[in-house]
Image (tube, rainbow, N blue to C red; front, side, top):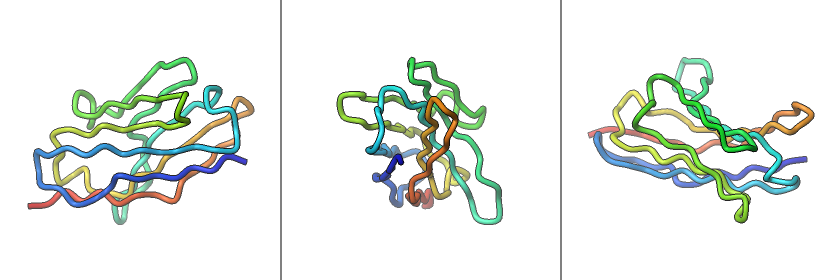
Length: 116
């Protein structure tokens, strides 16, 4: 059983930055594929970025060049650095972990609001 705890959300103005963190426990972190998803009101949850156990990353087109996902295996933590935030980035952001056996786990979510 993998437990995921997100932190770092908040209210920012357009153009500002935030860094989200997700601390994992309950499994060998270095073997997990990790990701960030987001869900805006009235919309489906969608992938923002993911990073494999081997460090390969991919991003949604809408955040490419603005967001960076990274992981620190020594700290069992995955990060999402979000720069040049825009109002359309407003959503609840969820951390996701997928084990080698393809079992998926979710965090509780953290709210990000971009507004002037």
